[in-house]
Amino acid sequence: MNLSLYLLTVLIWGTTWIALKLQLGVVAIPVSIVYRFALAGLILFAVLLLTRKLQAMNRRGHRLCLAQGVCLFCVNFICFLSASQWIASGLIAVVFSTATLWNALNARLFFGQKIAANVLGGGALGLAGLGLLFWPELSHHAASRETLYGLGLALLGTLCFSAGNLLSSMQQKAGLKPMTTNAWGMMYGAGMLAVFCVLAGVPFTLDWSTRYIGSLLYLVVPGSVIAFTAYLTLVGRMGPERAAYCTVLFPLVALNVSAAVEGYQWTPPALLGLLAVMAGNVLVFRKPRARVAPGVPRSV
Image 1 (cartoon, rainbow, N blue to C red):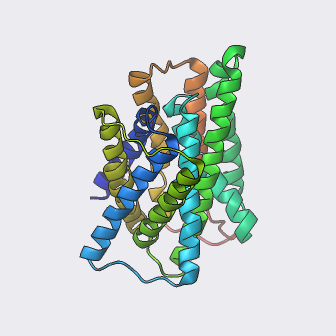
Image 2: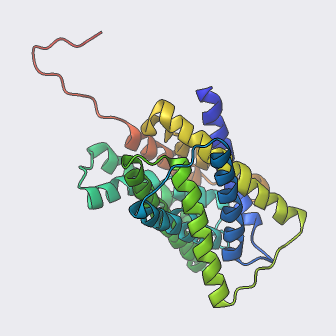
């Protein structure tokens, strides 16, 4: 059962990046995000109400959900969708996989948690891998500016995602389950973005093409409802560290989909860079071995 949930999460979240790319066109980027998370939030609320698992929250909980909505279901996806205008969706997935490093750095900054040596080593390896992945694009001066824009936005979106993770951690420590906080966070994020669109005069158009509606439904149901549920179930069964290995495989799936759909071309530096990013993530997740005192026999 755990293997099925693991593969489901990897396959869905490894392919949502190309669905994000398919959202570009007639509908403005903020409006597409409003549609996605308003629908996903409504579905989550319906499930929670039907199963009577919707938890009550105090004002502090709602404030944190509001902040979580900004980080996880609003600003970060604006960054990811905007970045996909300039760089391949598979490359965005690779940048996103570095969230493990930013989680460790933010935990140190805000919670005072010590950063292990393996996290620093894995982060350095991952950043070097990103440099190799983007080198073919950066080496062409005509496209370097657009590539840098896309890379910067993808990194900013990943930082927002990391901040949302810390907020979710605070909520869970207070006894609130992710399903409830995600439902509220999605609605808050979609609501705030909808208000912004109205004030900014962004039209709420809808593209009725099969491409847009199909990608929207994929992002709403599998991408937001099913994948989050599968991932959070894994977190409960396997623990967050083992469940987070999913992010190591996301780029592999996303880049292969990008090669098939967007014409992304593998190069030796890009392949080496992907391997470096994945190895860096594995190193970040690896637990350091406990030291054994002299004269104490090791368990067998």
